[in-house]
Length: 225
Image 1 (tube, helix red, strand yellow):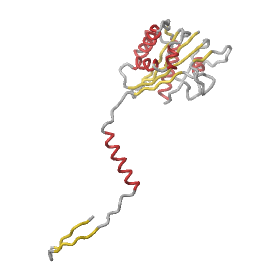
Image 2 (image 1 turned 30 degrees about the vertical axis):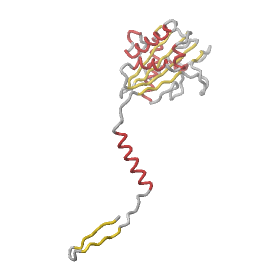
Image 3 (image 1 turned 135 degrees about the horizontal axis):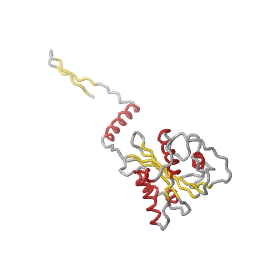
Image 4 (image 1 turned 45 degrees about the horizontal axis):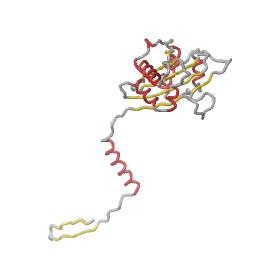
């Protein structure tokens, strides 16, 4: 780079050469990242969020089985659960989110020639507990931080006798009809769809919990007694 300087007294012009050192590679990289972030920030939009997962078996951490078979004469603990202090809930007392998810689940079954599921108040209580637990403790799983899986959670809620029990869970945020959306997403997932369309299930319920930031946690439990 060349810079010109004027000498006013002698009206002479001198040219001096100045060496400009190149930016270190690390500093150049930081400048480029900052520019890219600024450009991307202008295009960021808030989008709805959704997650879902189907039920694992109660015996093996890596198994892909989606239902749990009851064991006869199992010693169980029936103490009250930490979350969801409400008692059993009828379908009339269910929230709009819960009713929508339940109705659309039965629509999907009827379309496949299956009998609709009966609403089970005990399952609603159990499902609400799990949805609230996930929201408050910040996890998304069939297993609680305390190690309780679906069978143990059923026992804790006084559901002691059943042949098969299954569960779907979902989380979404920013949708106008979160209950319907959860079932829609479950139905395009083979594991969740298998639970919804399992011919052996007789009853079901959905328990939802809406967190402070508007996120909706849903737990869907199925049972054959």
